[in-house]
Image 1 (cartoon, rainbow, N blue to C red):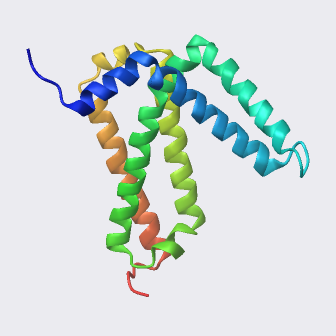
Image 2: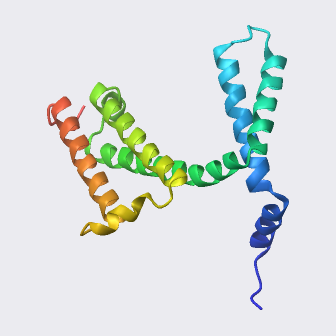
Length: 173
């Protein structure tokens, strides 16, 4: 029998207790809902307790709906991956252009970033709700992984082209 490390044993114990399936989604739904209610002040300036109660209720109802747990456990890992890809693009862009802060204020860069995130989230959501959607890709001469790699490479080239045109092709301040 292979001996597990104490960390893997702790993670397995948390998994058996439902930490990843119930507690973490509850905390995420509660905190996001509470943050939105606090920011928008729907219930007024002194609506802290109402915001807490509404957020708690929404989080509890969401956790008890079984499909939401499946959605969150399928969706959130992809959000993490998309975030890492965005950070990598920003690192690569900062290698080519020293004034990244001004570059990120460009409307074309923001529009391209939003478009990339929306397209990625669309494919992730479709993948969660319709897991066999990619079976149509089997007829193509390349795999879905190759398609994603090609799409991100083309998008990176387009971003570099837009960046170089908006900064006049210079990379110094």
